[in-house]
Image (tube, rainbow, N blue to C red):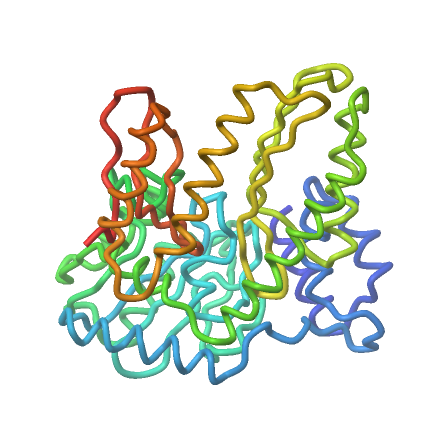
Length: 389
């Protein structure tokens, strides 16, 4: 089935299939409708030759990222890097390998970039073209079985002549809380990593997940503009929700409004933390949401605390503290200030009010690098954080 799916996507990209025929054939494959929904937004409408749409960032942005990555590699004495795409991570689909390749990955498929200190990078198990990387090892089959990604990573490193080199890896760390609250068991699957270790016995590996995460947190001008664009999609969504939400409405109508807004904005959301009790929405219900908006290469997480009907005195007090924390953070989070110092100042506000928080006051976007602790419960020790110094 996967071989058939890959072939249909390839035929669409090559212009051998029109959209209608592509959708008809994809609908006959289990999971094909979801795959088609992910692929078609990349194809600009009106093209006679169906090509995947223009990349969100220019070649200059690619050169900026690659230069920064190579500077970090040189400083750490690395000859090569292995950077995964998705590989078991269902959160933040624009991370890691896509950061290096500028796109070119099927959202639901595991893949990787092998990135040498010198020479051209290689995309591994890629299904779509990358605007920044010309060399690729596409998905291949032997006797009807897809060749595992780990084996192709080994082959790419051998082609570069780096099988005895120092190799940095993103995503093998476990117990690395502070790197990402959702991927505490790493990003690379066991079978992939076991194959790489067995195939490259003379290489020296070091996990640089944290260093790569901190590098990605510093955005260029194009990235900042894209993040602002994604944020505006979220702001308009909040305005829509405030205008359309009411006591007694069906939660399905609420979710439909969100879905339609994202579709009309040509956006999607990888994180959709929005929960309702069953039945019509009652007076006094408090809706806490978090959406990770992806829009034209930009990413922004937006949160809304919405009270249906009458707000209690307790909620008003909590809202006052939340605004005090946000206003203090906005006024004091500046270039050159230590994250750890700001975290302690925010915690002083918490201690003064007598409240505690579960999720971090601060975290980076793409990747979701925590620079503030997560607390599992009141008076419980907080998690380790990355980048506090």
